[in-house]
Amino acid sequence: MRLVAGASMIPHIDKADKGGEDAYCICTAGLGAIGVADGVSGWAEEGIDPAEYSRTLMRHCELAIEAAGTEAQGREVIRDAHQKTVMAGSSTVCLALMKPEGRLEVVNLGDSGVRVIREGVVAFASAAQQHMFNMPFQLSHPSIIESPDDADSASSSVVDVQPGDVIVLATDGLYDNMFDEEIARLCGDYMNRRRKSMRLLGSGDKPPTASELAAAAVAQARQQQFTCAEAGFLAQEIARLAHCYAHDPCRRTPWSVASCEQGFSWAHYFADGGGKMDDCTVVVAFVQPDTPQ
Image 1 (cartoon, rainbow, N blue to C red):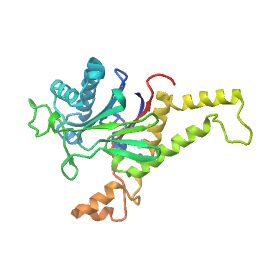
Image 2: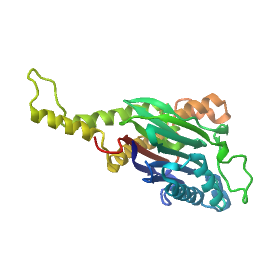
Image 3: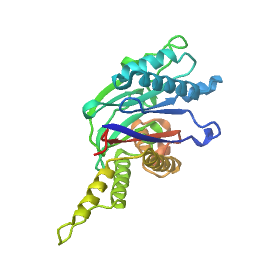
Image 4: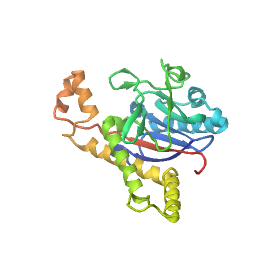
């Protein structure tokens, strides 16, 4: 099996002119890999563009994956990219790498994350890493600033996946504004629409003819063959909805719920709901057989 991926990135409304501070990569080397990085915006106060660090980090991750192919190991990819990103700045990072025998390696440092959606249900969810509320684990080059976090701090999981699974890898601009069940429902609805759009063998009183059986076999094979454009379309659907919720002052979101639970003095602003405006980067990858069936 391999990954077929596409992405969508919607910047914070105040950062639209520069394209936001997130970055992503889609690698076709090996069986496919995807990644996101979320530049820490606080660096802007020191006159440093946070996007430079996240984008450079992602470029080095992509190069390391391309060099290693199916032998790439998530933590080692992050370690290599971390060492080579020698500049001021910091970023979270999350990778998903397809491995032989239907295994997906997920490595996450910070509050980005991965969801594996199967038949409209969350089959796997990575956990966010935070030192405290809204202070995620992050990478900074040790020659620039001391940081307690490095590649060894990242969580690592190996997930068994199946053809037709939808992998959603995104920055916190998604997960602060949409609950997992909402993401899963959106993916499930898309897959159902996709199935209905294909010519499948329907039930009937008469036995199917040879031509009908052949057409059904082709349709079933097509169901498991995805395109990057399809993945990009679904990523855009998810990102647009999350961005819409970020604007909504009355929407119950993971951010509004978590903020109220913290009991901060400003939490009352979210008592009636509300999203969190942020960059939102979503990468969607479909799991499909490596060769047509």
